[in-house]
Image (cartoon, rainbow, N blue to C red; front, top):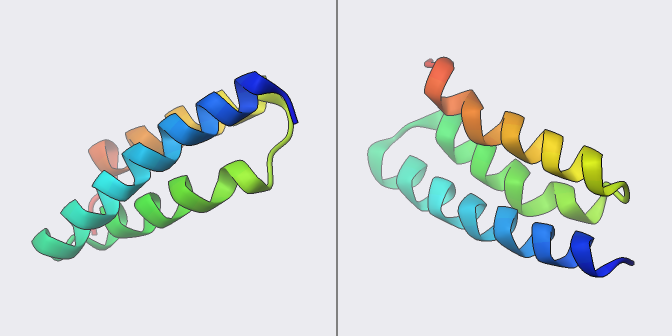
Length: 67
């Protein structure tokens, strides 16, 4: 595993924990599930560019999608 993947994974997982806590406290399902996805997906993606792209998409999803 590359150093860049580890650092990006740490950044996106930290943001995911924040999204999960926010979604749980506000009863926002989109933020909660995006937080879980942000925590788990760095384990599955090995390409650094794909890691950053998916992370940005998951971070922006609660902004534009409401349930």
